[in-house]
Image (cartoon, rainbow, N blue to C red; front, side, top):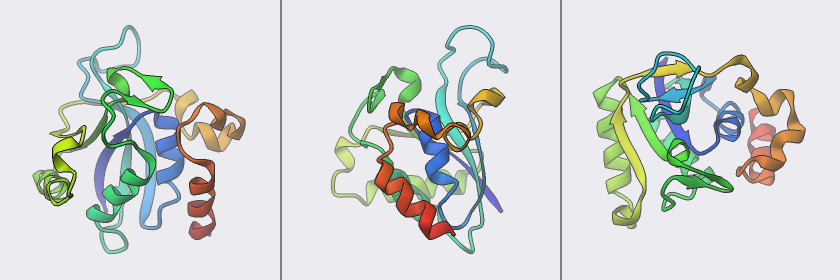
Amino acid sequence: MEQIYLAGGCLWGVQEFMRHVPGVISTEAGRANGSSHNTKGEYDGYAECVQIHFDPERIRLRELIECLFEIIDPYSINQQGQDIGLKYRTGIYSRDSKHLDEASRVLKGRHDYENLAIEVLPLSNYVKSDEEHQDRLTRHPEDHSVCHIPLDLLHKYKKAAK
């Protein structure tokens, strides 16, 4: 099992989508690369992200990144859907340099690489989000209306995961 952290705007939708991707073992909503070690207080520079444990024998990192591209606008700076601000930036984070190298190769291999607004950085700090944010759209599907993930795409992955 391996671990990667993906940021794609509001973490509710990213977590709900990624948890249904075949080969993803578990997900956890969190914050990447902020300066605090808890969720109390003001915004501290973090990106909303999802910690993903995946089985590399069932899904490659390249495929996970392609899944991320299905749910984000990769050209948008600090905004996904109606969510605006630095914490909604897109990114790929890891403590494993091999993951970062692979992510960079995947992005550089795209014809639109120069226009991408996705940061690829070492994970310097991770804080788990509060329980109210964990699996939010599973527990409260009515909240999907505030999420930027297309509902039909989410349903497609849910059906494939069964």
